[in-house]
Length: 353
Ligand SMILES: *Cc1c(COP(=O)(O)O)cnc(C)c1O
Image (cartoon, rainbow, N blue to C red):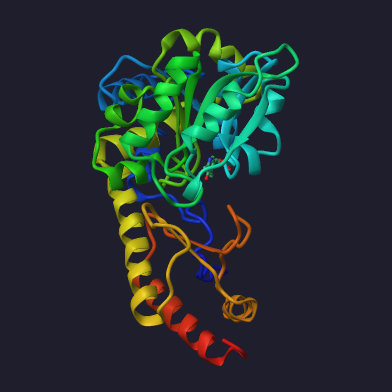
């Protein structure tokens, strides 16, 4: 079996990882016999109920195939086409969704705010909200936060409180891109409820893929009215899975076994270990505070090339540049030791370093 399989040496992304055992077990279990289609099955019902338990509220739950769809469709549900969404300039919805949010909303514009370490600066958000109020400016309607952020930091509850105050004051909704929400929960040690609806979040796009599933993100509407007709929006966009139980059941596996949090803790711990090894053995400081499962580094180009020649895969174009080293639910400690050792070697042999 698996004759062609060669291990990939990678810190590229948590979506390079395979399916975790818990998700896979439930997937196989859901494959015994037939079940009603389009989410009218027991798995989907049970999973939605389990989300309501975990988040301690009666939210509306939907499943889509990926994060781009989750963000684009949920933002479209919060906006009219003449509205705008305020997000960080490094936000995934701006940099990595190919205009999906604008497309799904028939043109709602993204307004880009600044802020240190990938987090929205409330004063810059307020500047964008109050800059204009005339009919020629796309009316601000949503503040979108990414938790954990694209730069591997997290919004503390205090950070969210300031943004929520702005949203309340100016009548905006709050959207959370939680592709790595579990990693933020693992860091903050707050409940999912405290970090979302109790902090003013109206809709959460909750990532399953990077957390250890094969496919499938959940969208949780804490303000149920915002979910009116949302199922039709998903269907029209080609995001209604007819065999929905195969997205729902793995999610149930993640929730019932606690794998969602366990996986995130492992990823965060590995990133912490990587950071510590880099600081200790190599004397390198990360570009941003490491608060989730990634470490960003500035490395000389020859060093990057040496690592790549040794087969290491990582991204260099995320956020503001630099090398992004992303850990996952299955990152082995030995891979980190190997990378650090290769990095040490590359640094000492690189000319001018
Ligand atoms: C990965 C990711 C997504 C979802 O991306 P898809 O490839 O569409 O599933 C959304 N937001 C953030 C911050 C991400 O890192």
